[in-house]
Image (tube, rainbow over all chains, first blue to last red; front, side, top):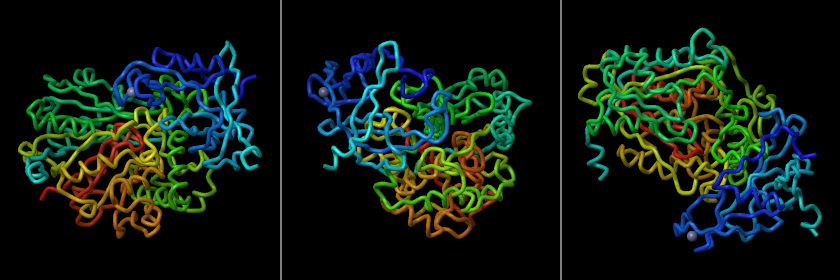
Length: 145
Length: 395
Ligand SMILES: [Zn+2]
């Protein structure tokens, strides 16, 4: 059972972002980096905006992140989210990975408790056919102890 | 530099036209294409021109009312400019007009119609999931599927960084409705909105409640642009385009509409700071010179950000600015969205704001700002590229 209903839109990889989704299929959160100057970028683009190299490396992100911003969504823009309402869509950032933010969901958390800066941990949601999606849950007591 | 640019002969808007505005699904008797063509004819009539005089068509946001089909429908004998500007959603409103000015100034066209037709009842509702979004892979599977949800992210961070509250968002919505209540063509003309109604309404995507979000409507709007020399013969009072610019800061890409990887310093912004410098510089004006403004109000919080990014108040000060009554017609420091805007008049991707800007400069708004000589209009905000312009009263 995936976190949203089975008819939720799935990623449809194309040539520029396929490596990201292949990483997810292996439950590895890989972000594109420039092989020349190491600048990280997301969503993937074919050329480094800093040094214009097209040589890329895919490096794994830390499993912990923090909430950069979020929204609690109260209506169904698509039938597949109906049973999850209200749910939290969040933008998370990673320590040591500047220039990269990821749109994801914050799960296992009362929407009223979400805060910007909140520490969160990665978990992998099995959406079937060998594809996994990165979603996050509160780091809970581990963070405050 | 500014003196030279400010001294050149400027283009004018000589005609405005619009369809009726209704809730989405309200226009059932004609196609979106017909409604758009009629809005163009109405704008030409207002200018005292005929389709035979038109040699340029300009739009934005992948308007589906294609120029080549419009040429046939209207019987335009010779088209010299058929252009669509790149834009994040409504970001191109004033960009389509900026392009028209460039074409006219360079001699590539003489009379250009900038238009937008958008009947959400005949296409898709913008509040719902839409197929084919650029970089949609990075938002759709996470349930971030529509603009109110996407822009709510930016507003949330804006309210986290600065002293902005729900009361301030409410003021933007209440101002729009009060103005719409004076505008008989506004979709919400007959519907009052109180502070209590605002707070009692359902959440859409926190921190945005129902009345923080623009309407989903059917309608079309068009404006006719020509040279200052030719504008002298117009039937209606010409309105000068003092400046019209389009652009984006670095790193926005699909921005809030998917990637959310804009630079940290620009994240909680409208992407209009760089654009504002060129906008005012090109017109030889400062924010203090602006008498009235039409600020793209897809979402209330974006209007607050725009007041800061355009320099009407300092960073983080927009809440206090609007709480002072600054937006309110007739006596506020900067009355805005005097037709009701997209929160309460109609959502024509900003083209209705352009039409209202022209009315203010002609002295014909239903919330007319006395002696207004300048009106700032923006295109869609928090997207890339965005656009804006300053209109001036002629004489
Ligand atoms: Zn590089």
